[in-house]
Image (cartoon, rainbow over all chains, first blue to last red):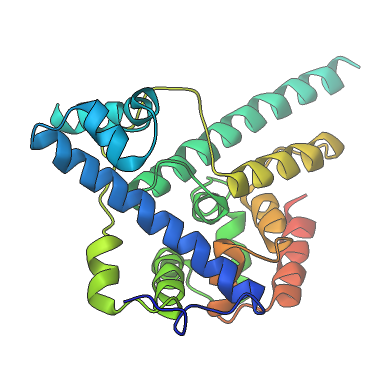
Length: 72
Length: 175
């Protein structure tokens, strides 16, 4: 579990920013895998967008092509 | 005059070929690691694939096997996530390297660090009268102080100053 205690302190920017960069990469992968799963479970793009807090168009633009290619 | 023109044309053709290989290889490495856009670390891997072999020779000069670079890049992400408090199981689960096997057909795009590599290469290349080679890419990456590529080289025990000397040596022999 990520806690304040375990996160690199901002006073060490090199470590903190490296963690941010890798957390972002991990978040991107988690998002892609979760959206793929949601589509397979029958979620609509509107529902996915709502869950991600972005517009339907943004959700579709970000993920539809990857999912379409994966299904081929 | 005509020979100079022909030489210039040959250089442009070689440059275009090498840039194409570099970009496509960087993208392939990014996709094989499950990332959509290549960053500086993927250009580092791609430099080793250029047919001139100069990037590989730079590492040979340092007595380092570049085969370990890809795993060293992954290790950097794992170490950064461990420092953020994630345990190994969570990292393995969430940082799965799902290969992107059928990339989108769209305009070539990179992450900001990949853009920085290409922009600096372009600026340096305008001044040079020789085609792009792998050692030029390493030269740009060696000038980066932060980011995954820089951290990977440091983690592999590669001293930046020593790397720059090896690159300069290689470039002086290449031209």
